[in-house]
Amino acid sequence: MYGEKCNAWAFWCLLASAFCMGFSLPLGRLGLLAAAACLAVDAARGRCRLRMPLTGWLWLALAALAAVVTAHGLNPGKGLGKLDKLVWFMGLPVAASVVDSRARLWQVLRALIYGLAVQALRVCIRNPLNALAISERFEKTRMAVHFPFAHELILQGNLVDGQRVMVGLVGAVALVMGGNALARLGTRRLVLSAGREPAEGGGETRARDFRIPLWPLLIGLLAAAEILVMKRGSWFSTALVLIALGGRRLLRWRWLLPAAVLLGLLAVGVAPVRQRLADVRTEFSTGSGGRLAMWTEVAPVLLKAHPWGIGFRAMTSERMRAIAPQIERDRDHLHSNFVEMAVSLGWAGLALYLVWMAFLLRDALVANAAPRPLFWMILAIFLNGVVEYNFADAEIIILLGLLGGLAAAGRRLRHTVAAGQDGTLPA
Image (cartoon, rainbow, N blue to C red; front, side, top):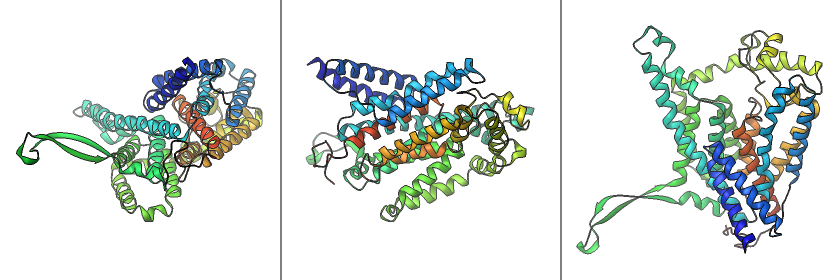
C-alpha cells in the first residue's frame, strides 16, 4: 500500500514542480527533488520501474564530457563549480518514469503552461511599473534624457523571461489548435460570479455568472508578456514556430489569423518594439561588437587554439576582448548554443549536443497527437539557441529536462490507441 501511495505522491510532486518551475526556480527544483525521492522509494519497493530514456543517457554523456574538458581547460576553478547546473536535467528520467499514461502527460503539460502564464502575468505587471518608476525618478532632473520610459522598459526584459513565455505561448497555441479532444480545451470557460440577479419566479437573488474563455485568455496574456519582455530572439523563434505550426490550420481558425495580425501591428506601433527591431542590424556588424564579431572573430581563434574546448563556462569578457576589443564589456558567452558548445566543449561536444537535441525532437515528434505541442515547445527553445546561449540557464535547463522526459514518456505510450484506455478522450 505504501508503494502505491508513494507513486501517487511522485506524480503530484512532479505536477507541482511543472507548475512552479514556470515562475519560481527554487520551488520547481524542490518539487522535482521530491518527485525523484518518492520515485526512488517506490522503485526500491518494487512498485515501479525506473526508466532512463536514450536522451537521458546522452545527457549523462554530455555532462561527463563537460567535466573532463573543463578539468583540463583554461578555467577549471570556475567551470567545475558551474557543472552542478546540469544535474537539473534530471527531469528527463523522472518524468519518463512517473508519467505512465497520456492522461498524466496532458495534466503535467497543462500545469506547466499554467505556471508559465503566472510568470507572464508577473511580466505584464512588473516590467512596465519598474520602468515607469525609474523614468519618473529622474523626470525632473538633468539626467531625465538618459532614462526615458521606452529605454527602461527594454532594460527590464531578460532572456529567461523571454524564453519562458515563448514556450508557454507555443504550447498553449498548439494545445488549442489540436485536432482531437485537446481542441475542446479551448472551449472551457472561467466562471466568475459578480453582482446579484433575481432568481426565476421572483425568489431570492443569486450571483450573476460571467463565463470567460480560459485558453484564449492565457494565449493573449502570454503574447502580451512576450512583447513586453523585449527579447528579439524569442520573438523570431516564436514567429517561426507559429508559422510552421499554423499552416492550413490558420484557414480553419479564422479568429487566430486576424488576432495575430492585429497584435503584430500594435506591437510594431510601440516605440520600444520598433527600437529593438531597428537595433538588429548592429548585431550583424563586426564593428559594433555584436554577435557577428563573436562568431566570426572570437570563436575561430579559440577553436583553432583549443579544438577540444576551453571548458564549460570558461569564457570571460577579458578573453573575448583580447581578440576583438570592440565587443561590449561584461560579455562572458558567445550568444549561440552552437558556437558556445564548440568553443567550450570542442567539436566533439558540439556533435554530442546536436545528436542529443535531435533525439529530443524525435521523441517529441512521435510523443503525442498532432499538432504535437511538446515538439513545438522544444523546437522553440532549440531555435532560440541559435542566437542565444540558453544551455547554461538554470531556468531553461529544468524546463527542457521536463519537456524531454514528457516526450520520452509519450513516445513509450504511443502504441496505446484504444479510446479511454490511457485516459484520453476519443477525437
